Image (cartoon, rainbow, N blue to C red; front, side, top):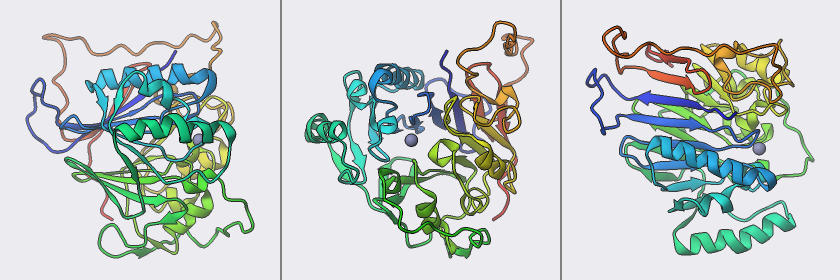
Length: 356
Ligand SMILES: [Zn+2]
């Protein structure tokens, strides 16, 4: 089974009854690519941005099909922009299969591969180059804005560099920096190169940093917080290692971990997420066997259960409200809703974000 988390961000009060064919939301699909990454954003005007394209190898066709299903669900027929955060197989692996199925109009990345790998380099110098030679290729630097109508899409990290100027107003000292000592003498990997995005839609803010390492997250967030706060933190590194100086300082109301059954969402990171000062909920893309029962959330908030579900523990489906006269009125369009497509459970986050 494959399910995803769909996050609908509604910009303003607007009409209580949605008008057919006129999208008012920024829709974010956190697509299950089994421990890889693929997050699709679709703006009110229908413009689409995909961050990463899932796994390589045996998973490539599966993940490309899942991304395609999300695109179809969102009503988009092409990918207008595709960010590859970095060139690891769980982030760029499905691209060849995806590009065979849907047209991609712009490829955005951090620049050359820094972690030589025969398969990756052959792909980048062959099929990838050929793809963007026919469309558009953008190498993004921190501070760059990616033009997308209705959304402020800012690059905050790329190729080990981080944004130097605050996104809004003045940078404030980050009180969570003191306990971390950056590792020295470590080999830089493609994770360090991750192209990170900070996305603003009306008053809604979210961040996606790919697999940015703690050292680079520290560069980004310390000693001063140049980003401010977010409503939604799409956890970096599949929710494996994270630190207070990011997850607490950004004061997210909601955290989504794009983890797999045996990858990410493990105890140390979950403890940090659960103790985040402004947090309302964590949603997980999978139940994590690394976190086990102790460090997980209620099943309603988990998009995919363990792969080999035992027959003796049935998972009851969540029955949506009936349609027609007996149905309750539709929710007012003044909040941000997260929906679990496995069980239909949805939660709307209505109250205004806490003041910074
Ligand atoms: Zn990864």
